[in-house]
Each structure stands twice: as structure tokens, then as C-alpha cells.
Length: 451
Image 1 (spheres, rainbow, N blue to C red):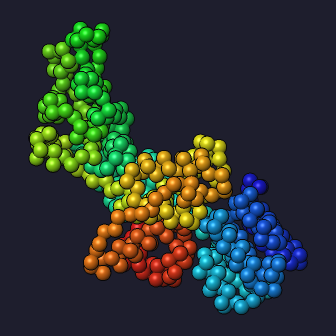
Image 2: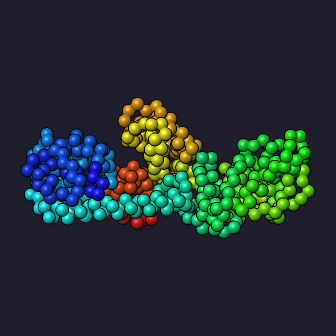
Image 3: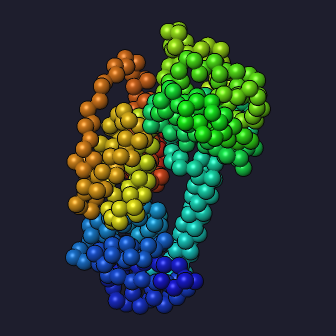
């Protein structure tokens, strides 16, 4: 590939037109092929931003079947590529079908070099604009929420709430099931706050034995107990000027809850065996999968501590509630593990995508990541299948009697899944749904869906 030229792939079997195209498009790095297999190889090898495609290709040079088959396969390999379709056969019907399948534009033979040149240049500009917009979007999201991948309106609301509360020096309580990304969002609170240059210290209250957790949190003085050979600072003190993340705060033993409450009220601590009060400037973010209000009723969690921790409460949806995200995350994990495990798996089969979208994901994002990693290891084909994922897609059915609600929920779920499967390509998403693009945009507006 020439560094200062953009790749243009021309799929045309007529030698005379091949020479004309080569001359017309000297400003591009022009790759010319005459049949489907060579075209697919060129798409994979050269990754052209723009493709011109003659529908009349061998072995059907007088028809359109081979051209449409080529169009479909290229879009499957590179859905964001701008494909300009050419044909002299059944022009009106062919144009409608090509655009419906996801082609960027259509022109009728015989070729007008100037007109085609303008279409090609416009296609390159649109491609460059989309790439830049995607880069800016991903950079913006990843810089604010490192590691977060989502297209879910519910998660966008969570992110918006995190952005709003992060600058305020208030305690934040993150509520969500295991594997929903509570620590990731806790880090986002830290990164978006004025403490971003300070430390972020996380401690899992459920992972440390009760007899060790107090010393881990508050530290201890030399000689305060057997084995205390030197003065040691605790996690709270080490988080000075930064953020302390207490994960699974619902598992904190009752006796320690009193000391945490005093720290939150007074902003001072005492090390075990110490007599001196040590002031600490720390932002506290907590998380739990437990129902703390139920724990308060049962007497296992202090009510006064709960209100100290939950100045702001953020509820994190499960993966099953994040429409379309299971597919987006699966694709991201596949790319990640392809690199880590030195594999070259091309993607997921359609049955795998259907299974991923349908499965309930009780273990949330963590379970999805583990299944994708295992499937990458076990897969011996070009694509991951539902068998490789070992998915059981049987779900408990929830009976909803209001038909309007049923239809609306089904529409929203189908639109989000179609956008995920088509990598954000509206034409392909509309095709998957069996509707026109205007109808698709109408539904997006009706349900206020972010795409």
C-alpha cells in the first residue's frame, strides 16, 4: 500500500474498463480484480475504504447474481466499506436492492468517468468522517470510562450519572449484581474527579478474613499484636488525597461498621494499638450486590452507616438488561483474546450471535468474557459457533399481558440487537429487521433509542 494514497478496490471483469479505471483513478492506490474470490481476498488484504462493484461478474457476466453475492460477502467482511455498485441490467430494481443490502451508491453503465469520480471522492470523504467520528467517540468514552463498552441506553444513563456526581465530594454507593462492572465505574468516579491525580485503592471486604480486615483498613502500631513487627499504614490512610473503593461493603462485619461510620463522620482514624487520631482526606466509593435495606431490616447492617455511604446511589443494570451489549462485548473480547492467544478467528456464526443475544447471562460481563475466552481456545474453525460458546439459551418466560408493552419491548430489543450485529450499520440493521431505512429511523425516534 502506498502511504500517501488511499486504497480503492475496483471489481470489474471487462479489460477495457479495467484500463479506463486505472487511468481515471491515478490519485488512488487502485486495486483491480475481475471476480468474486479475488475481490474478497483484496478486501481482507488491502482493507479498501471504497469499492466499485460491477454486478455482472463471472460466472454470470450477463446477470446480477454473482455481483449481489459479492456485495453481501464484502459487507460481511467489512461492513463500514463504501461500496458503489454498477450495472446495466434491471437498473431500477438492482439499485433498490443494492441500497437495501447496504451499498453506499449506485450508478448505471455506461460509465461517465467524471460522475463516477465525484461519487468515489464523496464516498472517501464520508468514510473518513465516519472513522474520525468513531475515533473521537471511542477516545472520549475510553478516556472517561476505561474498559467500558456499551451501546445500551440504560448504561448511557449510568455513565451520565457518574459524570455528574464525580466532581462532587460525596460518598457514592454502586449497586449491582456480581460481574456488572462496579469497580470499573468506581474507577470512572475517581478519574472524573479532582482527585484523579491521587491514588485509587480498592479493597474487597468479602475477600479478607474478619480478623485481618480491620488491620488492612486502619493499619496498626508496632507491637500492637503478635507479628506486628513494625508500624503499618492501612488502606484508608494510604488513600490520602485519592479515592478508597470498598467493594462488597454489604459483607463488612457488624463490629467494623462502627469504626467505618466514625471515620466517615469525623474523617479521622486510629491505627490498631494507637492512641493518636490521624486526619485523612479520602473520597469513599462503595459497592455491593446485596440488598442493604433488607440487611438493615434484618439487623445485619447499620442504618446510619447506610445513609452515610449512600449520599448518591447508582444502580447498575445486569448484562441481560443492556440490550445489544452482549454482542458488542463478545466481539470486543474476541478481538482481545485473538491477540492474547495468537489466534485468527474471524468472528461469530449467526447461530452464536443469536445465542449470545438470547442468553440470560446470570454471571454478567464476567461470565461472557470467560465463555468467549474458552471458545477462542476451543474453536477449530474460522468462526466461533454456539457449540463453542456452550450456551444454553433456555430462559424463564416472564408473562406480560399488556400487548402494547410486549410489542414496544420486542421492538426496542430487536433494534438494539440488530445494531449490535451490524456493527452500527443502519442499512444492514434495517435489512436484518426486514424493514426500510425510513421505517427504521422512525422507530429510533419513536422509542428515543441512541445509535
